[in-house]
Image 1 (cartoon, rainbow, N blue to C red):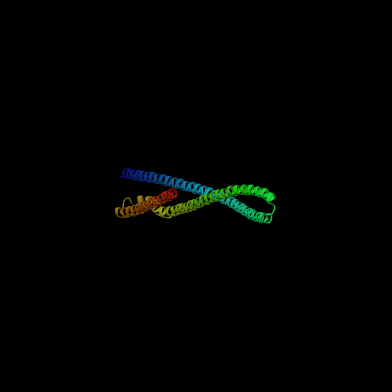
Image 2 (image 1 turned 30 degrees about the vertical axis):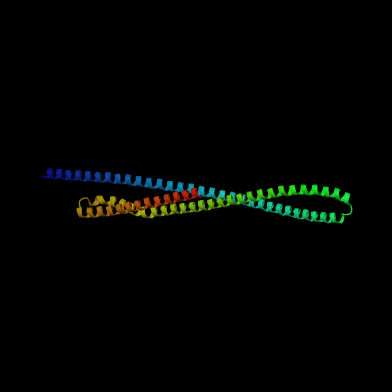
Length: 255
C-alpha cells in the first residue's frame, strides 16, 4: 500500500514538472515576441529620426538658397540704381546740349551781318547738330533697351520670390505633418500595443477559466480594433499629406 502511494506522488510530481516546463516555454516565446516588437519599434524610431534629419537638411538648403536669392536681389537693385543714375546723367547732358543749341541759335542771329563767316559757322553747327541728333537716337535706343531689360529682371525676380515662398510654405507644412504623425503614432499606437502585450502575458493564467479567458480575448480584440482604426486614420493622413504635396507641385508647374 505504501509503494502505490509513492508511485502516485511521482506521477503527480512529473505532471507538475511537465506543466512548469510548458509554462516556461510559453513565457520564453512571449519574451521573444516582445523583444521582436521592441526591436521593430526601435527601427521605426530610427527611421523617423532619419526622415526628420533629411527634412532639416532640405530646409537648411532652402534657407541658404533664399539667402543667395536675397543677395542677388541686392545686387540687382544696385544695378538698377546705377542705371537710373546713368539715365539722369544722360538727361542732364541732353539739357546742356539743348542749352548749347539755343545759345548757338542766338549767336547765329547776332552774327547775321557776317554772312560768310556765319554761313561757315552755320554749316559747322549743322554738322554738329546732325552728329548730336545721331547720338541722341542711339542714346534713346540704349535707354529703351535698358528699360526692357529692367522689366524682364523685375518679372524674373518676382517669379523667383513667389516660388521661394511656395516652397518654404510647403516644407513647413510637410514638417508639421511629420511631427503630427509622430505624435499620433507615439500616443495612439503605444496604448493598444501595451494592452495587447499585457493581455498576452496574463492570458495563459486563465487557460482553465473559460469565462475569464473570454473576457481577456474581448479585451485583446478591443485593443486590436483600436490599433486597426488608428492604422486607417494614419493611412488617410499620409494620403492627404501626399495629395497636398502633389497639388503644390502641380500649382508650381502651372505657375
